[in-house]
Length: 192
Image 1 (cartoon, rainbow, N blue to C red):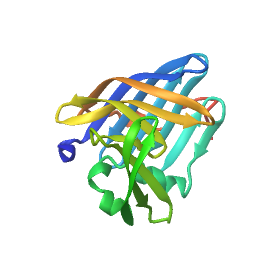
Image 2 (image 1 turned 135 degrees about the vertical axis):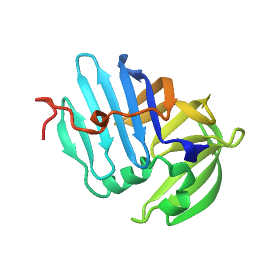
Image 3 (image 1 turned 45 degrees about the vertical axis):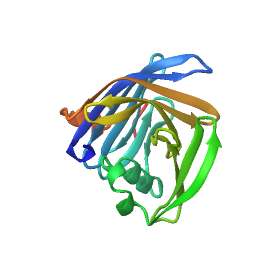
Image 4 (image 1 turned 120 degrees about the vertical axis):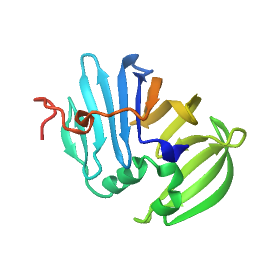
């Protein structure tokens, strides 16, 4: 079912709960490895994190434009691979089962993955459902059926001691994705 997908467009709301700051989030994904995360917060502006298949960058209205370099670029290349769930053996040097662990999300099976650069990443799978609840620094939840696959509609990313929560409202597969999703936005606050 995952192999039949070619693109995904997800939209919803992004919140910094402690500060009560809310904005719109849009995630554009296109096979094999293009992804754009856009967060638009009123009075702050548009933030983008993009990997276009070759380059990765971040645009932020407060910090400007940042071209991403290695090892961050290799990490994005793996993380943003549209078929990542079916290609773990190709993307990682070694995969080990590290037992179970109790977390705030409940009891999880822990998988350790060794990257070609020698870094260890962890993935947590819920013991009861088997669903992925943590990967790449992101906590996942609120899985819903979209066509033939289950998709997490909630993502929580800890950033500098704060939790950024993205709650998706709509996810659509196999729709055209505009090339503009993977291009740099022009702004005097987000230029190189």
